Length: 64
Ligand code: SF4
Image (cartoon, rainbow, N blue to C red; front, side, top):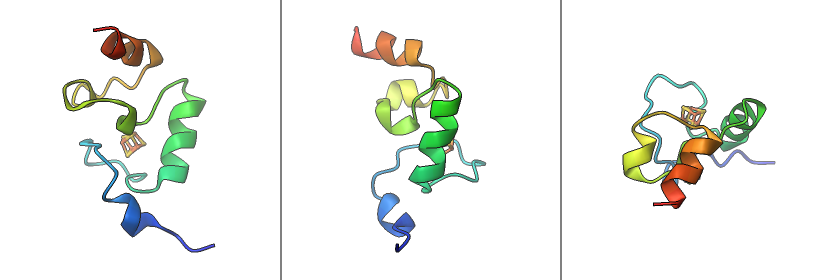
């Protein structure tokens, strides 16, 4: 299977620059799921920049 990391760049909104998983959606998703979190792409700009990837923060965002 071909890696689509280049294509993923157009979808990724994560601003956490030092992350080695950036554009590697397969690793990113598993990492955050393991930690009961969601990847950056679930959050809007305002919430993404807090780097709080918790499910409670996601619920807070969609409840506004
Ligand atoms: S969402 Fe998390 S794992 Fe994914 S690129 Fe951003 S900081 Fe890295």
